[in-house]
Amino acid sequence: MKYPEQQPEDGARRIYWTQKALTAWIVTSTVVTLLVLGMLLYAAIRFLPNRAVRYDAIQEHFKYGSTGGEVNLGFPYWIWQAAPLLCPDYLPADRLAPDYRARVAAHAARDGAAERLALSREGYKSLGLIYEKGLDGRDKDLPVGVSKRRNFGLDRVFLNCAACHTSTVRDTPDSEPRLVLGMPANLFDLNRFEDFFFRCTDDEQFNKHALLPEVGYLGGDLDLLDRTLVYPNAIWLMRDRVQFLASRLGFFYKQPAWGPGRVDTFSNAKGIFAWPWKNLPGWSTERKVDPESVGTADFPSIWLQAARKKRADGAQMQLHWDGNNDKVEERNLSAAFGTGALPPIIDHAAVGRIEDWLLTFAPPPYPYPINAPLAAQGEPLYQRYCADCHGNSGRDFTGARVGFVTPIEAIGTDRHRLDNYVYDLAVNQGTLYAGTPYRFSHFRKTYGYANMPLDGIWLRAPYLHNGSVPNLRALLQRAGERPLAFYRGNDVYDPAQVGFKADIPEENGRKFFYFDTSIPGNGNRGHEGPAYGTDLSDGDKTALLEYLKTF
Image 1: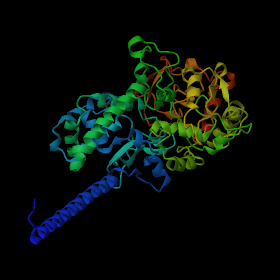
Image 2: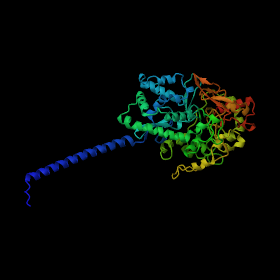
Image 3: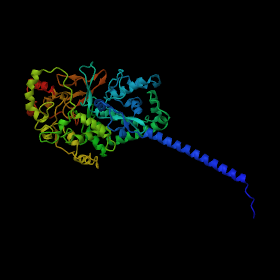
Image 4: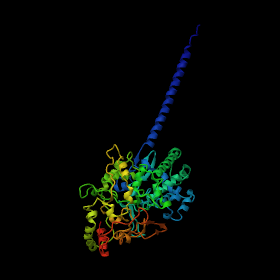
């Protein structure tokens, strides 16, 4: 068979259209590739940065700087701001203005963003969080002890070290509060803070349909990607993460209420290792607790850490209330767990800045008049009864037993915190930071409570490890003469008793926490008898108190 010869113009036309198609394919592929690369670049710029807000001044870094915990536990910034307005019923009613919930319920669109944000901050203040004033006289954006980090494409916030180690002092109920860094956070109610977020994230209202409009009322200018992808997923992830924490840390529902200024540190630590707690007896329902399940104690002060690295025998002092660790750096890494800074994500440089600063950071001097002749009479009494266990002064920590553990049989104070820290927990903690230079190796089960230096003792009320004695004057009484109950959470100072006002049930309609020493973990016995100065005359006790004001 013969085929007709191909015409030259047909071949040229075919080549032309082939080249045309190839060019179109190349152009289309290039455009698609550039679009994909652009999207990938945008996604990288948007979602990959892990960057905390930085503060050059170390005091600001302590108050607002990150430890890295936002990567693990960080709440999306706008959800943090919206939470008190979405869940006002879970805030402590006894610490709120009577009309707070009504004001929150009023139609949000009638308020400006500033008014809604002020309501949000009012809610957090009911939990004991402290807001500083900005240059404009308004509360700052976030409370002291809350840091911010850009991570996974949005700003995330969570607690840092200052949340548990900063508070305020007022001279009178009408005085402006003075912020004091490094002192126990005796206003912060961590128990209620955790309860608020556990309950709020479990509420059916905690969804994008309720939260995103509230974010808009608060002034959150979310873009399309935020509204359709980032925040809806962030809400779901936050709910899932917080409810997981509730399953691990919800042990406190079995315990008596902690009250402000207190924490059950090592029950929290047990939560890391999935310690079983759901079948324990509950205080609210059965009026009993498991002997090892309550370890509530006061937040400690954290000044002058370098001086705690040496005691009479040349070793480091035993730290924590029960002396279960004797390495400052390891204790600090352990404490950072409370801010969400677990081993894979902790910001060692940021924590190191605080660690270095705390080596020499000292408490402020007592701000009220001191009777110098009376204090001089008290000094030899202190040297006789106190110095061996607590150091020669508020700056000289020399003493034969400073930083050592006194057996529980000798000190006689409430033993719940001691018994809560069990041998198995110490063994488990030895696995933390495994495979790194930071691996924990200094946790030990002890048999009593550690003798601590008394730097800034005037700011560390209430006293004993569990905060069961309201002031130093009461501590110098035998247990039978100490108050059976008092009120915690007041920052008005009482120079006569050397502590914070503890006999006032409320202020401006806001109630203080009623602390009952008969409840498990709250016992106020111990640290008494001739060796502890509780048998001194009233005049000698007054002189001793005056000397302690110089610390």
